[in-house]
Amino acid sequence: MLTGEKSLNRRKFIATAAAASAAACSRSKNSPWRALRDDEARTLEAWCECLIPEDSDPGAKRAGVVRYIDVQLTKKFKRHRKAYERVLAAINVQARRAYSRDFADAPLDARTAMLEEFEKGPDKAAFNMILDHTLQGFYGNPRHGGNVDYASWRMVGVTPVPVRGRLLYSILEPASKGGQG
Image 1 (cartoon, helix red, strand yellow):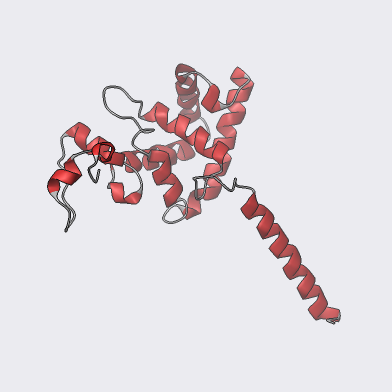
Image 2: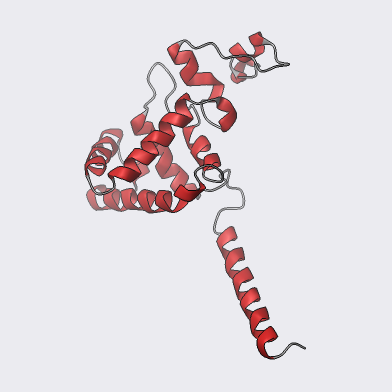
């Protein structure tokens, strides 16, 4: 049996392990997200949809921008994780005050108006961060998690460059029709 200082360290270790387990379990077991919680992903998707809405071409939602941001929050954007938590919570608080519902449940025109105010306020840097990451996910290379089926590249007329070992025709045809996307 351990006593004294070693026992205290063991207790600290067990307490830390329990806290880490609780934090890891705070996300749903079946969640498709790596860094985001389900509610955060839903809010971010509504935000990105306001920035790049769908029209005759795919918008941010269909292009998988939130997937891109989620993947990058475990890699390149890891240092921005707390900022995302804070700003997504803040926009939901603003929406609940104004519309008695979460940001994602507000109508598109109301969300857009909220984001216009948000952009002018003290969180302008956070707004610009999400705008930058949204544009990167929409226009970037699909291998990073966004721009699904080369959506933005097709929109602007850029021919996807074939990856060595893949046939060009399978890249140009959307994945939904049997191609590589």
